Length: 138
Image 1 (cartoon, helix red, strand yellow):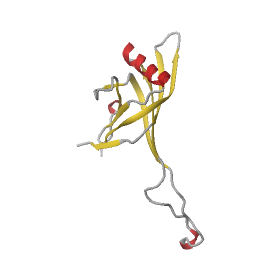
Image 2 (cartoon, helix red, strand yellow):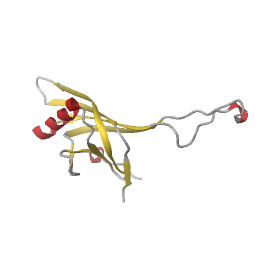
Image 3 (cartoon, one colour):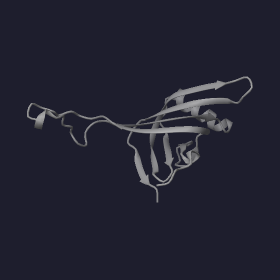
């Protein structure tokens, strides 16, 4: 696989619940992580005293973070609404040459900043809030 352009990693949200996704604001930097807790089933009978893990068990989660500038008033308003209302709408994460991850996320952090001689910026953090689906890139 060749190097990918970072601007092609997109975070989209279903703004109205109708399945139509729009890119969230003007993200300039994004990060996606997938996690899975392990379940230790090691016992005195474990071969050589090595740890054993139970396959397919544990809690899976995903986290998304990004920073940038809001592109318009509606995306700014929607991000704030999701946070303050505690909503868990569907998001799509488009990862170039990897695929698309889709499912419910909760906005767990929303920060605003700005310098007197620059644009207002924000940071956004999301945590998975249910089962996610994955469709590989073609």
